Length: 126
Image (cartoon, rainbow, N blue to C red; front, side, top):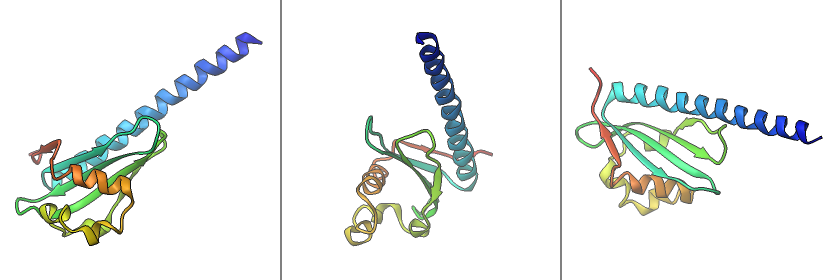
């Protein structure tokens, strides 16, 4: 009985690792695609138990958001989804526009406010 429990535990651990690798590949693919468009700003709102948020924005030299992608969730099944309403918004004006931010949930607002203090902005790959 204990052997079966041990095998199930090892199997669950291996499955979590494989799904985690798939999620990392999704991040890498999305980041690379955005990086080809413009420099990328990354905002994050990590949580240990509750749902966390990771936001990627392709931002041109004037501060205009060309494309926005967000990954939100607790599990390794979370994937990036496009946020069309952030397109053509100015990144500096985004944090100041409280009426616009009210359309989003608290996790999205926290991640977007982290973008005003960018964790990482990387240039376009040539």
